[in-house]
Each structure stands twice: as structure tokens, then as C-alpha cells.
Amino acid sequence: PQEVKNNEFRVGLTPGNVSGLCKQGHSVLVQRGAGEQIGLSDESYRIAGATLINSAAEVFKKAEMIVKVKEPQPSEYPFMRKEQLLFTYLHLAASRECTDALLQSGISSIAYETVTVAGQLPLLAPMSEVAGRLAPQVGAYALQKASGGSGILLGGVPGVRPAKVLVLGGGVAGTEAARIALGMGAHVQIVDRNINRLKELSIMFSGNVETIYSTSAVIEELALEADLIIGAVLIRGDKAPKLISNSLVSRMKPGTVLVDIAIDQGGCFEGSKPTTHADPTYKVHETLFYCVANMPGAVPRTSTLALTNATLPYLLQLANKGLVGALSTSEPLQAGLTTHGGALYCPEVGHALNLPVRDIHELIG
Picture 1 (cartoon, rainbow, N blue to C red):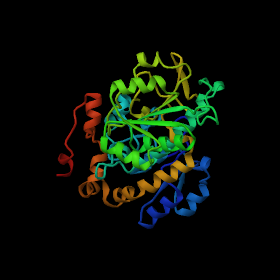
Picture 2: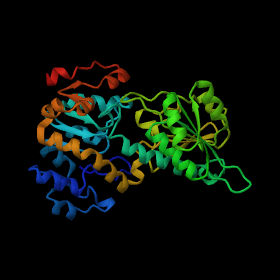
Picture 3: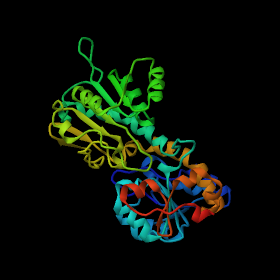
Picture 4: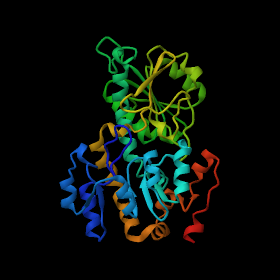
């Protein structure tokens, strides 16, 4: 189906994905216009073997598996049904409403962001890379005085110091944010609680990025000096920890910009609330918050290609083997199972929302 979230033009399948599925004997239904905004025409899907469908309601009605990008929106809740499989980003720890809708419908769901391989998140990583690389760009724009920022150029000029950029978290998103901020000429600091990761980052950036062990006192000290703060912390499947309090924000320099990449998981700043590409920022005390909940949607063509490159192998497993068959032979997909038959299977979501959780072995034996 075509995505309906504000300014969301990504699509869950490319014509190339459709062709691959059709060659393995599957039928693929694509809503008309689903990829038009990013140059993937209805005709390209038809040539690849898809059947074009006029409405999302009809796609949901006919399809056994729904492949999306973003979590179902309220307008899509009534379409979901039992004995149907949903494969998409869910980020349920930050949304009791969507969790309840999935449970009440009885639909089976696998969340991209919790599919896990050797401790890594291969389906979240591509969008973390995109969001991380976008964060300094949007932060640099927000720092401009006309945008509500302090009027500082991220890279400075000869004779004038560059902006100080503080990155919270040294994972995929934080690393990419640091890489782009450094490339734009900023003074970059990364804080993380994993010493080994800090060592890796120091080597990766040849010592040009400050790597600092994270404590609340360190974060407070660095945040008060920063011009741009990028929140990039992640706890797999669970709510993000709140690392920046409103009290701390109230003491920051006027015009400081805070970009919360973790907003899909509830945000890592106390004052964070989801925004859209249509209205991305808001003021908190004398600072400017950017909390767009689908940051990669700003570059939907790049994001779609990066995402579907990663999801296709897992999609083929599900299509070829069915839900239980795929789960029985794939530990990564087991980690991604979120709901099935009205029950919740993701422990992190259960912890975040205080809901009972079933053991997956009850399902697969």
C-alpha cells in the first residue's frame, strides 16, 4: 500500500523486488501511485509483474502479507485482520495506540527494527545511516537565524570557530552523524558508555572526533557548551532513555539546536515530541527542537532503495516458507516477531508498555 504518514513517500517494495517475488511464484499487489513520488511508476511495477490495485483497503483485503515502511496509521487500523502478516517498522514502545490496534486485529507482525543478527539490527541500520547523515544537515539549517537558531555556521570560516556538535550515542546513527558533521567542518564530540566502541571511533576518525565516556555530569557539561546536539541513542525495541532534561535545556545557550533521531522510540530528550516534515521544529525555552519521526522520508528515493536492499532476503523467507516456517528456521526473524493472534511477543515492548508477553517457543515449538 501507499504510505499515508505526513510527507512519507518511501515505498515497501521496488519494481525489482516485485520481479524477484514473482519469479518465485508469488503474486504481488501494489496500490496505484505507491512509488510515483520517487520515480517508481505504476508502469514499472506492472512490467515487473505486479497487479495494480486502486486502494489501500483493497490491498489489505486481498493480501496475505502486507509490506510497508512505517507503522500502520489510524486510517489503516480497520484494514488489518487475523491470519495476515505485516512486515514493516513498528516502534511500538512509543505507541500504545498502535500496539492495541495490532493486538485487537489479531494480525501477525514482524518489526524491521528488532530483526537481529549477532547483536546487530540489519533492517534498522540502513535508515539509521540515512537519519544520521541527515541530522547535521537539518541541524545546520536550523542553526540559521531565520530558522530560529543561534546564527552559527556549522563549519565556521577562517578566523571564526566552527560550531560545537555533541552526538549522544556511538552506534550506526551517531557514527554517521559525526562523519557528516566532521566533513562539514564542525568540532565534533561523541559520548557513549561502551569504551571499546569509543576506541573504535577514535581510530575510525583518526582522532579528529573527541570520544568521551558518557555520564550525566559529562552530558550536562558538554550540552551547555554545544551549538548542536544530536540524540542517537537506542535500546533495541524499548523506549529511548531520556538523557537531556528540560531543566538542562533551560540553561543552554539561546538558539541551541537539538535533533532527536531517537524520536521513533520516544525520544532521548525530555521535551521531545514527534513532529513532521511539514512542521519540523518547535521551541523549548530558548532552544530549537527537531523531532521528525520519519527523518529518512526526507530523501525517500535513497531511503527506499537502501531499505528494500536489506529487507528483501527476509521478505523472501516469509513468502516462501510462511510465518511459522520462516520463524522456525530464522533466529533473526524470531527476534522481529512482535504480535500474533492477539498476543504480544516482543519483551522490550512489553516492558515499555507494561503488557504481558508470550514466549515465541509456544508458537514454533
